[in-house]
Length: 320
Image (cartoon, rainbow, N blue to C red; front, top):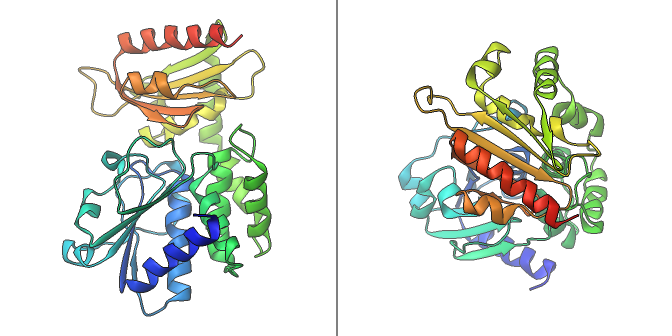
């Protein structure tokens, strides 16, 4: 199906449901939350008689810029249409009760590793789920509210790091241009996603001072005491991988942040990034995954980090 046909099919499913529950992935980022609240806003504005819920548990550092999540009962979910957003696998949905829903739809841009909903709109080449939603709306020439467009643009710049990574395409920028028609405040969103406080600036400066670099790979290991000393939570600290980007000599960069509650047996959350080098297969080998050039891995030991770094160095050598 083309984009217009997919949009028509999605809206048909929404119109057929009295209740819709919108799910996202765990440790929700700007794209996941932007997609969730943009779609909620659009449905509520277009169909005010419908019940729409946006549940969720865990959010990343961006969570402060989005509304509070909704409480929803099992009974409500069981009679609802569930739309799962920005989630590559069923295990990563931030509420396993999505499986109770009468009908399920997924909208996602990650590499396709699993089909788990009744109907799916998956575009691996899209830079963000918010890009897909914007293009679906644009295909029908929908007039969006400023609030809806703001959420979509927020997710778009979040996942593309302000249109600076290789997944950014002509279609990405066309989606952004479409959203700008509706009065998006680009200055405010820029500061929300890429501005910083003194507290964060000092932690980011500390991260830079800890950089280890060899054979094209730069990495930092941050223990719990390190980010706690700077008054950051784990969720805030793990988002700081962008600090290591934009350095000419670094082809691949990685941030390993100790997970909370692992004092006796330290375990780390790893964030891997590159400009153009594929990393997803390496992440998969360690139980992680994500995009081609942007991946995450959980529960890494120190020894696993060392072997992972060697694998990243080898990958850089293969690509030079």
